Image (tube, helix red, strand yellow):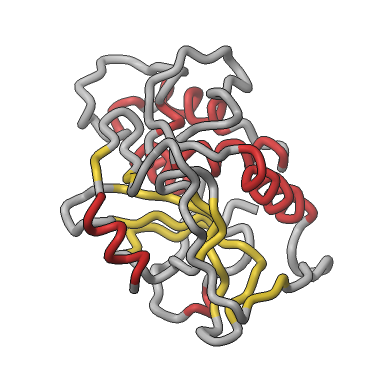
Length: 220
């Protein structure tokens, strides 16, 4: 509850990436993780090796990415990345996917270039931009959906598995956010935590049902 009030009070719009942020962007937030949590081992014959790499990369970001920034960066292509110590919510997903062998910068660009009219037009662009297209939540939502990776949105926590991508509407007005389902389990609430960056750096927190879920994707 304390964390939700904190987010409500300090919510701001990140215009460039479409990611929501909360709190002081220059200081790491206190992670909102309940005490009764533990890592659940991945099941090799059910969960692909890529999921292990995905979560390893996401958890490495907890130590490195201690700031939040929705700023526009000029990136190399492919495999371009903002400074490792900072980034927005989308960068958590992009960096984790690269460790699992998928460069979303390249994949999103190629699909947008071939199907530009199908992607959101809310930014007034007339062509693709490899610096930012993959760093916008609505574009990732469209890409995952077009690739057949979308799953039903559910209020049942059992349907959300480690490595899944989840997107939210933070304020009920289209303020977007995105993160990864962790394999760290909240045994009190019987659900997995979320690895995300909503201000102050990457954190692993109990936020699956904190906001309205707008997308559920399983890529691997």
